[in-house]
Image (cartoon, rainbow, N blue to C red; front, side):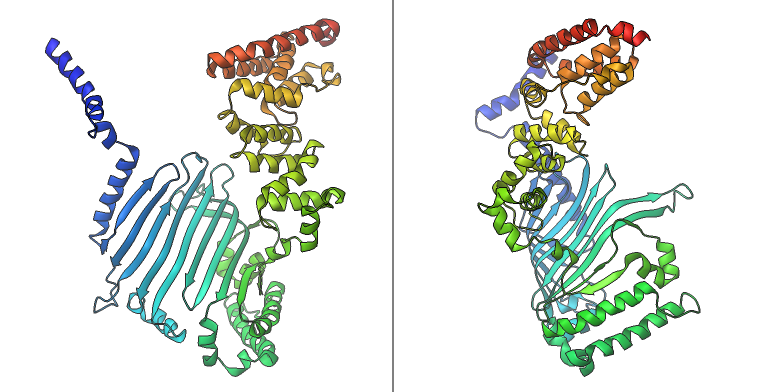
Length: 529
């Protein structure tokens, strides 16, 4: 037994001894990054059974969920490549999941920089398309595939972007309000449940138009005749599609609107062949009934309401230069509140105007101080990682206004800010509040006040004030108020000795005020009626 104990002690000391002597210890070898890298290397060796592959280096960063491979070369040997000439080269390949602190989102992102492949890597049809564009291989400076799924709201964003040198840049983006499946009828073959917010396909000319226009019919490339020509050709295509749905081949209203957008956009593109955008034309969130759209093409047009244009619809969301100039200058204070809010949000978020946090915050801060919940929420979001205490203050204000998302931000920030400081910030925001006398009319109203102060929704969060209201309702025998008070006590207990010491003063004030109200308002007599 003594020998076993001595051996165990020696084994325990070995890592420290090795480290002290400057040698690698077991703890240096067994790290999460090394474990993940070993697993990925095993996966690559398995992949080599299907294709030849090599790379220069691999780096793993679990904090950002990032894996990077450099100098990748692959020989996939597709069946149409009889001579084995297909070699795919990638200067840098980055694979990403969500950051380690973003547990409520699932993300899969692949990004390629400096990719190239000869035409032999593509099937014959695709090779003929490249030949029409006047290129004999693929050179892709950048390509991104990104799928971001939010677990709380089941929302998602999917995006694919790629640049083919001397051909085109393509961007496909779709935003979904809800994505999941319905397995109530058949869990093995569930039905998709998808609500689409918007989708857009943007094709930017990088040389492809100049290469293919000579191969198109002259009426299609002449701005004077292109409109009627395209209208006639597309009308025939739509009629053929509709005949597959039923005997009535006439275009629907949404098909006619799409046709009109093409007739308008195509001649404009011929005059300045830079970009074409195909995007959805509905507003709000739309349910995608895939069975109906498969059975009748008109249902797809009625659902998606596609439009062709030279610029995406969100370009219209860009702020006028005159408004930005006013917001950035000495006239900012004289702008109407609505314009200050619009300009401030655009500058803080970077949507509609270049991001300028200092200017945007300066515009929004007076509005937030005056009770504008939207402005307060935007400020809190912008400052969350830059100035957590300021972000907490504005989240308190946003929660008081009932803004969705404010309470979740309060919870996150309380994990970063010392509990004593949290109490001080809550007191800064709520310390001079006048409490509602009307809420003393019933136990239910008192309980509601306690709940709002605990959550921070409808009132600014304040654990001290929540304890005061909960004490009154608990004294009147309300079980839910007792639970609220227990929540506050547990939060303090789990925050540690320093939090408990900081809480004593706040609890003393809350208890004194509760007793003063209980006696002064004779609540036992009032609640007994």
